[in-house]
Image (cartoon, rainbow, N blue to C red; front, side):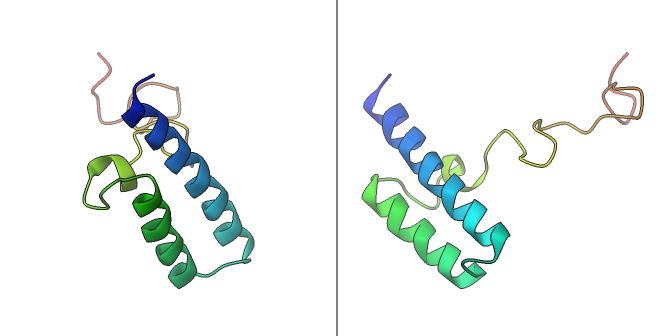
Length: 79
């Protein structure tokens, strides 16, 4: 694992915990944004990076593509 990969994994772990606290109402959106800035700075990551705020895995569906009711890719892209 490269240094960047380790820093990214550590950042994502910390932000996962912060997201859980936000969901539970322990912190608010303002707190979450502040934590995001602090954690990104701690691990030497830019908040402008697609890596920080755009995870490829969507926590709601555990995937980054919508599926139809049959489990296929939505919008006719599964042919």
